Length: 268
Image (cartoon, rainbow, N blue to C red; front, side, top):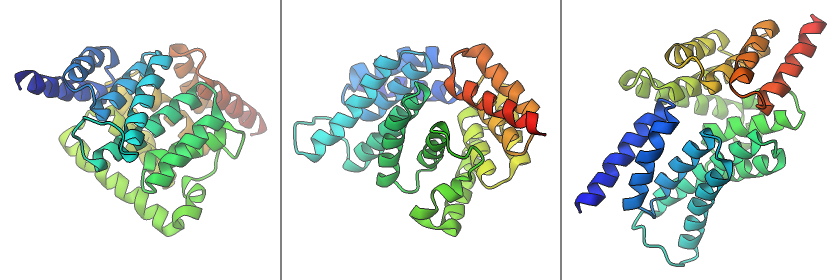
């Protein structure tokens, strides 16, 4: 019983560190949580994300695949001893699909990424992160970089409903930020949502807040660059992509978007 409680404590610590982007510090805590709760698919997904951010891609995919398999086994009435609810298992399954898709996108496996994000969105049509990831998949396959998220999900919800979904997401981010104002993941997610509502200045403010806390946070740098590109600030966008490439020289998203921004800058 005591070990199980300690496992939960380590799980809570790991998630706080993940929110801060402190991947190396989070890993030992999530591993200890899994020692006591080896069938917890939420911890498996968390470990997959941490390993992904640490560049351990194969190990990360294994974690996501285990979470996916456990939900499938549960649905097929095969052995499952986690004692978790179907609702939680499904949520972690969707999260595993979504994160695995994003990892494949980072590796340049655009078709696989798109298929995973489409499946995640099919299972949860209100999952904003899957909507945004799917839009990025279209971009990575050479479609319109300036395309709007609302257009890309219009066939699922309709434009007005799509706007309401994103506005609701912004409200949820604000609630979290009142409690955790330095949560850089939520700050960036809010920035992305605001950009998709064409609130570009407010979006950039969110990225800048995140970068003040963690100056080398790639998600903030990249999304700030993409938002600047959308409003025609190509030189500033290129500077953001350059910062990403200083940290990750082979980042395919930054290389591709920098190339696009340079081409557009020449037209001005």
